[in-house]
Length: 463
Ligand SMILES: Nc1ncnc2c1ncn2[C@@H]1O[C@H](COP(=O)(O)OP(=O)(O)OP(=O)(O)O)[C@@H](O)[C@H]1O
Ligand SMILES: [Mg+2]
Image 1 (cartoon, rainbow, N blue to C red):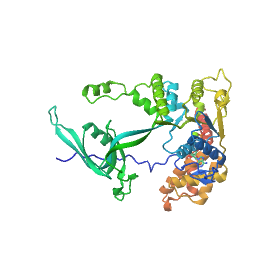
Image 2 (image 1 turned 90 degrees about the vertical axis):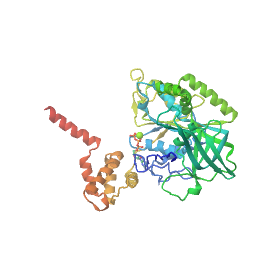
Image 3 (image 1 turned 30 degrees about the horizontal axis):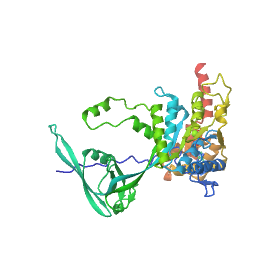
Image 4 (image 1 turned 120 degrees about the vertical axis):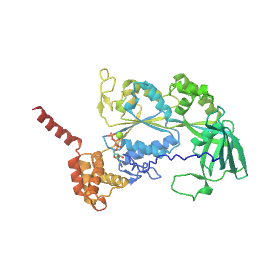
């Protein structure tokens, strides 16, 4: 009887996708906190980068929660790029939740509810627990099949045999089939180091045993040594979750294994509501854990781009939420100057960035400034490198010039079409030259020229 194949599902690799900010790898600061002229993909904008560096330090020192920062500056001056760089500097253990102002409007969820949910996505909890586990390298993994007890042709898995090897001894375990599912979910195969929690049967893949380290080095794989000590032992487990994870996990109680409760889950709506009451309950438990020293709060970042899209009600909620004892740091970004406040344009006068005065008073404001020709050229060069586009020096000058005259965004957007033109034209190495840049500007308009063109044709159409 052949063992059931655990087919490996490869995650789709993101490496070859190039997005708007792919060239940004961090803030590019020196150890003393001053900005390099050109580092980590970031060019210029030194003061704003240094200010963001200070914020990163404060967040790491957990001294920043409950405060709000506003990145304010014209379009294309790097506000979104800065926020992204902050998240990269913080690493993966500090939650970073980016949203756009308009995201909170939906027909199904109240906007304050949507904001609250994102607040809780941005607050982490690091839980340390000592648990009884079986940990080791998987040296045998074979599900045992049996005739389907209900008859018919199907076979079911009656139990799972798994052998784990640790530094001091090996152990053969006979496990419940429900654990087999967990093992499939974690994509465990022979040679992986895993642990199984004795009480809950939860399975966690730690990494690949380093005995296999030379096998292939194609994948981003974490190699770990064979665990010390015995297979069966007590282990301190550190888990990073967000308050939102806890809310969701508790709103959707797990059903049993029997058919009735599985049917019950099918009938239930996918998203059980997380109520205010549930959140209060969870906060209470979390606070107890923190007092006992089991858990530690890790305030992260809630980034709200295009903040002028929020309305008065959302702003009031935001101001109040900032003052609650558990709150992330909130980073806002806007490219608007004096703008009416949404939802209050007939009662309140226009306000800076469309933000009401009581929130404005609580903000630390970081300005971003337009780039000079030198910086624009450097950004275009960095972009071309990330997109794998080769471009001649004169063409780079020309694109830089476009960035100064029209906008940085327009210049960056022309790079790809210009490189396509170069390839179609059969250029050597598909190098973009001045001709391709000129041709691309002819094909694709910037906003100002586009309005001009439309104006003409519309009047032509009417007359
Ligand atoms: N200093 C910089 N160094 C490198 N790349 C930059 C820099 N500033 C901006 N960019 C890049 O230029 C493009 C536009 O910047 P970004 O999207 O951050 O602007 P923004 O200030 O958020 O504009 P908007 O107000 O329109 O949202 C992005 O591709 C960004 O990665
Ligand atoms: Mg932006």
